[in-house]
Image (cartoon, rainbow, N blue to C red):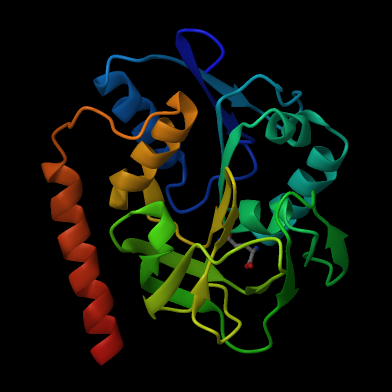
Length: 244
Ligand code: GLN
């Protein structure tokens, strides 16, 4: 954190915010404020420049056409890559995750370049879309409880040697490659297919981003009973989906 204020940047709410992904910024902001932090929230529309001085950047999912438009604009804007070079934390969901990779297949069926901030590339799945609840065990190095989320994507994401899987699926498709991986991460850059929104279903993930931004190992506890109730409900739904 550069000064006493946590700078939380929400990239392209006008293009990338499906399935409640807006909730991610609300949850991270709230949980930071509950710890007494002063939060400056910066919503960056797609006709605005991405600031380089943010602490945490959130990017959501999107339908195929808005995803292409977002990638076109982000490729012309050096803000996000420069922020990552400065050590910023980036958390991306679905279309946002695909855009952070080297390339994905756009709404015109063409290969579209991403930002190359994660060593992944996405292709278009030939089978049915991956739709439904996910339950996944997180990379143990991150020290988080299982992730619960909702996925809805046609894209399939292949991981290169420069990233590790964020999680391994108990239920659901995840990256869709059939190897049981879900999402990817390296250092402070994260990608996932989980909507829900993922931060409301997994407040420990929101707290992890805040801890990374503050460079601390622990945060004061806050009441998470509402989140816990949602987690129990959705984890039960995922298990039911698996046995159906
Ligand atoms: N359009 C992308 C896909 O279907 C991402 C969808 C999403 O963000 N939910 O793979």
